[in-house]
Figure 1: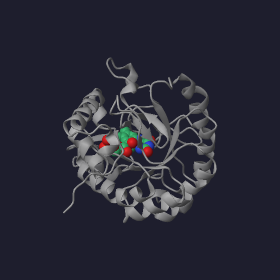
Figure 2 (figure 1 turned 120 degrees about the vertical axis):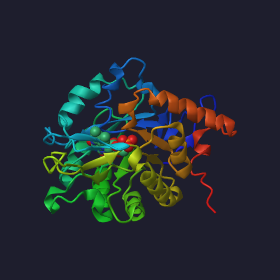
Figure 3 (figure 1 turned 90 degrees about the horizontal axis):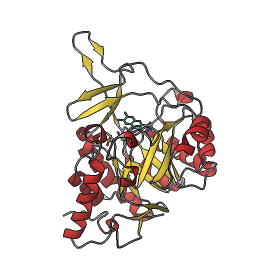
Figure 4 (figure 1 turned 90 degrees about the vertical axis):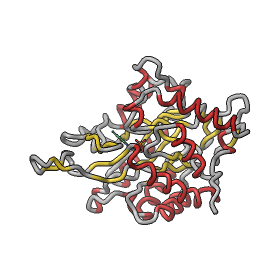
Length: 316
Ligand SMILES: Cc1cc2nc3c(=O)[nH]c(=O)nc-3n(C[C@H](O)[C@H](O)[C@H](O)COP(=O)(O)O)c2cc1C
């Protein structure tokens, strides 16, 4: 299901994976709680985003990792939250009914330690009002020694296949950059039935306290996000687009997007939507600026929809 133009009056409105998006911006998992956190900030509105991805959700509640869980680095941050969440049953019964589905498209983020857990959580969300399901394949596979499902095309595709069997809702697979060939992984996930791809999740890193000679992050390693990873993320989007465009599979490009030009770069590289995560921590009003900037860029370049901009990279 490719993104297709929907309206000429609002150049930012279009269809993504069969959903009506009011803007190409998607608020990223783990950066906006369960869709309610930023709505407490004056001037912020979920309506400024085409979609909002909820915090990673597992079968059972999880308390997450020991502190420290976040650490600011030059031009970015490390996080190892450890998927703290109240469990899928609570999310479906208690949180989803509190969300205003007229504001935006709400997307669940499914996480798991086993294939069976991915299946269980996806099935539960399938029977809920959620608009779409994003599969986070960066979780460690406990049955196979803790290596992330998303690091290998084989296990990534198996997770997608299992989730695809239990839901008709739009399925978006979030690819890990911590692997050899992201193109092969994307191809396998598409063949397994994903409707969209999120590119990329965080890049593993660490920080050391030289006084104590201990890792700063309680989990030793954490995921690096923010402007520091933008050039890497942009290349990964460019690479995945080479595979995805032939199948009409849209991409949510993400990793360090902070400015209007960042967002436009990702769209030129092939992203149909642009994810905003860490930059919200610096500037909760960043969405309004990026929406206005994209609309202005389209006007200045004689384009009437965002889809005209997607994948327009000139090489050679
Ligand atoms: C504090 C924090 C928590 C996150 N939690 C999740 C999560 O639960 N599931 C997931 O798929 N990605 C999670 N992510 C990754 C983001 O959704 C996003 O893919 C990544 O941070 C890159 O985008 P950014 O540089 O704009 O933040 C988290 C990121 C941060 C910073």
